[in-house]
Image (cartoon, rainbow, N blue to C red; front, top):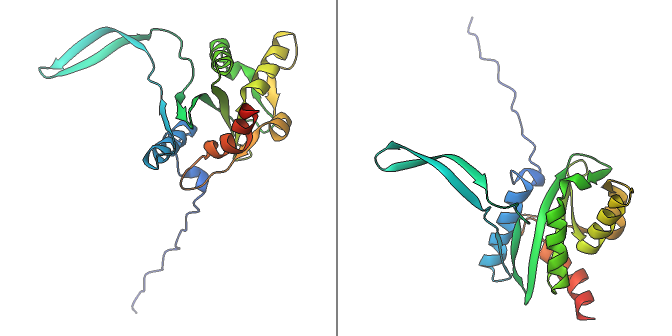
Length: 194
């Protein structure tokens, strides 16, 4: 009797658009590269200022940093220029379906974004709600209001409902991945021109 091998079940892997990038930051970097290549904007990830303290030389031609410290607290993740406006923003992610803790936004970041907006630039956060698989553009004025309320004993987070009412949903696609400049075109620049 000839035995025939039992055919293996074919496993089909579902691919989600949200899994194209490893993290929010990498998706933003890919988006910014697309903006640069299409000559839409020039926006880069800021390097983190680091003070190297100790270096070892494991081989003749290679150096290895063995100890380093941050020189100053980092302000925000990204900055650049778009349509003549200085753009400066930070990226945040939350697992929660109901809010993002304000503890995720540092005091020096709020101060920095306030200085940007007071000088005529565009400051904001991009927030990813993993539970909803949604990306939001949070204008600085909404962040600042929630932050100031928390300092006066109010809520220590920004609710998902606040994002639905006062932030702008950002579409996710192949190119650009997270098209935050379209939000700036439709909702932010018109207000700045008034």
